[in-house]
Amino acid sequence: MTAPVLDVQGLTVRLPARADRVNAVENVSFAVTPGEIVCVVGESGSGKSVTAHAVMGLLPARQLTVAAGRILLEGDDLLTKTPAEMRHIRGARIGMIFQEPMTALNPVMRVGDQIAEVLDIHTKLSERERRQRVLDVMASVHLPEPERMIDVYPHQLSGGQRQRIMIAAALVLDPVLLIADEPTTALDVATQAQILKLMKELRERRNTGVLFITHDFGVVAEIAHRVVVMQHGRVVEQGATQDVLRRPRDEYTRTLIRAVPSLSPPARASVADAPVVLETKHLMMTYKAGGFFEKRREVKAANDVNLCVRRGEMLGVVGESGSGKSTVARCIARLIVPSDGAILIEGADVAKLGTRALRPHRKRVQIVFQDPYRSLNPRRSVGDAITEGPVNFGMNAGEAVARARNLMRLVGLDPDALARFPHQFSGGQRQRICIARALAMDPEILVADEPVSALDVSVQAQVLELIDDVRKRFNLAVLFITHDLRVAAQVCDRIVVMHKGEVVEEGTTAAVFAAPQHAYTKALFDSAPGRNFEFGKFDQE
Image 1 (cartoon, rainbow, N blue to C red):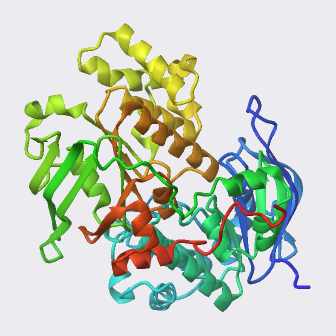
Image 2: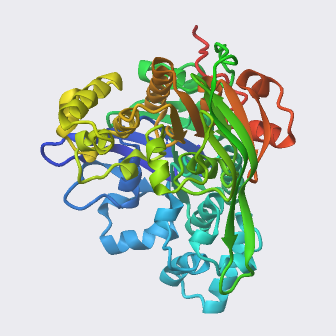
Image 3: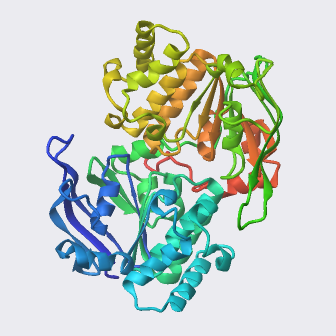
């Protein structure tokens, strides 16, 4: 039997005093062998990332401390290493890919320099040799035109390209272990499929052991050899992928797998006779790109987009990054002014209205963003966040607070928590607060821009159920933007598929999923991870 690259034995990491539990992780044991991909799954707070950071020696000093266990890298106990020794091991023997490449990359350094920085620290290669090594590793992760791309900045790349840069930096010294912490969570299905294919190629080519942290069971089914399931800091189950997915022993594992949305749309009541609340006609949004060192050019982020949403209907807009989904959403919410076309809210065109004329229409369209932590003011209580809008539109403070308390109950939160701040809630709870804030304005249209993409599967299921319940209860027209086809299948009445700023296909969700017509739509469906795996059907049942 091959000796493991990574062998975690009885790892326990202690939390600070007065935390919600004693240990962040407790008695965690698992191993990764050369050329093997081990996926660690579990909800937020399960200890997945703490385990990965313990392996990397990146636990925050005086906050999280290792109380017991061993972490063996090719038989060498990392817990006995000095900070200087760990700095050498990181990069040279262990590489790490973080969840959000735009945060992990330095925005003022060229991407080639950021990859070369690893070589500069760990090798004695000349500048010319370092540049050639960087070009080679960029080519190995299938980045186009490495000679040009080596000198660009992170903001000039797409999300998928930035993640490839992160992978290149992690692999440039051929580490024996690669740790990937949610590397595809924020990526659309097409880009995600490319990254997952790349991970499998690199694993086969370099025989690197991979510790892959994720909450996406589609990804698990697609790439994992073995699965480790964590809950509240403990390993509750581990085994071969097919055994865990088909024959889970622990009820928590069963609950997680059952929460994975199906790619088969359920039957939904028709709203074809309901009045149209929102309509766009020939909507255009053109940006000017280029600058001092680039030729000026026009980018059509939205090109002749026509769509309509009826009262009580949820219209899904799907497509990969850069397809124009969020641009259309921001135009409809009038966060940006469209270049041309009409945006009709119950027949009134708001596309070109000025600030004062637009104000009465503001409350009619409310938006829920992807990241609830960034869309809430960390210095204001959630009660202030929910009541601010109604008070600004003339409601007295007492009535606004009463409405906020009712909305907190509606979204499944304690009304007495209105005085708390955003950091005192979980990610799923913060998204519920954002939904309550949007509903406080009594809107006619709710725009949900990737509202569950950053949430784990069980919390995602709860928030999706809440959005659907809110749609029915308030008879809202909902524009639901997502890159997750499983989510779209479960909650949307109709689907609009966008590609390069244009609508390439639309229809009822059932019809589009059963028989996609456009080649791009077919390619999207083919890219969905775990598309051939039926989750929630266990062999014991």
